[in-house]
Length: 385
Image (tube, rainbow, N blue to C red; front, side, top):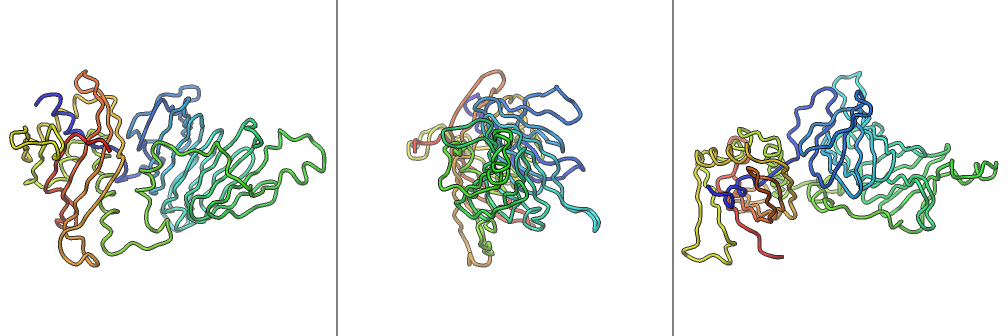
């Protein structure tokens, strides 16, 4: 198999099928640029993050320059670290016993992050807390963005800003609090930038709701993908008996994570033994009857996947879009067959040869013994949108 065909085999990465160790809080789901990790036990020994890397309680993450990363937390929450930002993962764990207290605690040291809450916030909102040097943020099941501004930007002063996309948060500072709804931006001023007069301290430190959204709240490169993975409950609705989109995203997430971990067995476990994987060098719209197609059976796929996984380094992967359709019986009670189409951007080094490409992946998923497995896959270069 040549290099042009080989990269199609390594078509995925990241997300979650968590088996959580006591201090494990999540793993790196998406990564762009240099983001460092400083463990709590190793001061002044920060090292660059890698895709799929496990993160522990007490780790401090810092996005260098315009870098960004998305972390999939152990309770299913997602955290997007914005450029020039620094965040400590204080504690993230559910209640394992009747006396154990669940916690989702983060500290924003500078810059910003977006959080889509998970099961801890859903089951016990009081266990969720984000702290800054200025304020504390609570949650009521939400998607929100926190920004710790160190220096003035135009008319916006240093302090803590919190913008709610859905759900709601509570911003607390100086003994007062404000409740924020979707579209609101709360602000708590940094006391070190206020002249120490009694009047100023009595009024200016109280949290307020702004009339406009500051320009430093910007969309990250992975926000669209985060939106696609957000559970329907986060948007105030209940999933139907057949939520093909959710099932497909979960399946892709687990498969992506297996690829990122270079776990050959876990990758192959997502396919039926009789699955066929077709690799084409052109999109179907550009193919002719004599266009080359490589068709792999299960054994051949295993050999190709093993070879590619061993020779793959510096792998970066982004799912730009995920679309699903269902085929089969009454979709109100069962999904039947789920057909998934995903547009993917990836780059890396395969056996010493750098590559970067955009591909389209088609999967046909069927349910066997309670598990969704791929019976067919088609992989080919993407056409321009």
